[in-house]
Every structure is written in C-alpha cells, then in structure tokens.
Amino acid sequence: MDVNFEPQRGRSFSIEVGFFDTILEIKEKVKKYQGIPVSKQTLIFNGNVLKDDLNVEHTEILQNSHIQLMIAASESDKSAENSSSLSKKIQLNVKIPTYKMHVPLEMEVTDTVGKLKEKIQEMEAVPVNRLMIHSSGAELQDHRSLCECEISENSDIDVSFRPSPTAASPAAMAALSPSPGPGPGPGLGPTTLLGSKKLKLLVLPKCGTKKIPVEMNASDNVGELRKELQKLQEKLQFSLPQEGYFFIYKQNVMDDDRSFRWHHVGQGDTIEVFNGSVTGGS
Image (cartoon, rainbow, N blue to C red; front, side):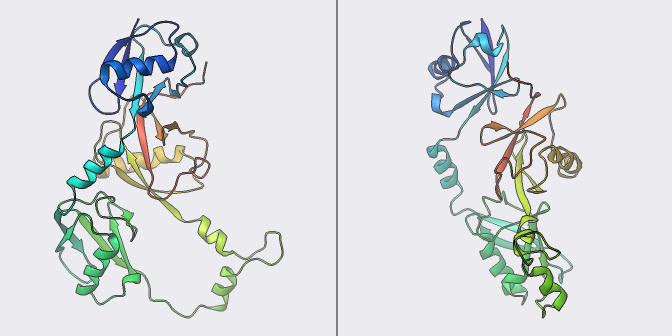
C-alpha cells in the first residue's frame, strides 16, 4: 500500500510499504528513495511518535495515510548556515527613550546583544547593566548573538532602562531573606523569586520560516501557549493550521496539560507547530 510522507519543509512524497513492515524498515525505505539518513528521521502519525520496533499493523497505518516526517538538522547544515551569516553587516533601527526618532545603528550579525548594549551606551550615558533590549516583544539575552535572536536587516530594537539601584528597605530585605525553619513561611526566598522568571521561547509555525518570540512562565501548562499565539497572531502576521495543531519539543509531542518545566523546556528553546491532533496510542 502507498503511504504519504509530509516533511516539515519541502514537498510531500509517497512510498509503498508492506503491512508487516516495521517503522525502522519504513525509515530505511525513506533513506533509499529520499536520501535522508535513518538517524535523522522522526515519524509522527496521529500525534504519536512512531517507535522503530513497531510494525504497520500495530500503528493503524492504512492506504494513503499521511505520516509527518521530522528531519533533524545535521552539523554540516548548521555550520553552513552559520558560515553564510559570518561577517554580514546589518542596520538596526534603535528606539531609545530619550530620542524622538529611531536611531540607525550598524552591527555584525555575529555580534552579541552585550556588544549592542555597549554601542548604545556610547550614545546614551547609561550603565550597560541598566539597559534592556527588546525585539518583537521579547527581551534579548546578553550572551546570545544577533543572528541567534533572529535579528536581521532593518529590525526594530526597543531600548528601556532599569531603575537605578537604591538602598533596600527593611521590608524588601525581609522579602528577599529565606523563610525561617525547614517549612514554608511568609517570606519569599531567592528560590521563589527565581522560579517566577519568565521563559523566552521561540515558536516555529509549520509553514513559517520566521520564529515567533513568546514569553511564558515555566509553571504554565503548554495549553496556555495556544492562547498566547492567538493574541500574537494578528500583531505579528503569522498563520497557524486551521484544522488544529499540536506542539513538538526536541522531537517529542508535548502534553497540553503538562507544564513547560515538566517538559524540561529551557530559556531560548524552540517549539515547533505541527498540524493535526494528538490521539491515544493503539
């Protein structure tokens, strides 16, 4: 029987598979006809990642079924992508609170956000540690390069200032001090403050090429990401699958009812959108 494969990028294709073929054997056929290494393939059917030792009979794959194919990027692909962007100059439109108009600023795409702050400090006499840089609503981290932050030619950069540090009041000191004793207390310890830190994530729509920056709490359930994307959809002009979709993180289907912390999602990680719906395994 013929089965249709839908890569996350590129054209769909079909391959003839046998009723008792294992998923590993199907991957080997994909390698034979499409040249995609088996180790780079992840097959998803009805929202489930197909394990190599399962066969077609146990996965309910039928004639003309559609299987989504995720292809992991190779190191050579990554290095080629990185090398193509080396030494490329871009002009940014920087909005500083004390300036009435955007200020043009030339940078290398390989420059870090920290270096961008140093350039801004030359124009505005404000300590680097008080500068906050935002693009598309997300705060940019000092150690990341402009390329990693999806900053390109004529990107808008918003600059804001952190308040000057002042002497901490007794109430503030009490809030920062750990609670006495082993049990929970009225004070908020440093761990509590750290736990409330926002996660800066990037979401890659299935048919999109530009990643969408999103801020979420680590304790939020993945389902909250849907609401956030709906809010940003009109503002940032991107499309989501109309027939329904689910999220993939590090080639695993995400559970809407579990938190980002449960999925071990980290700062700056990318979450991919796939069309379809997640169903229980057979």
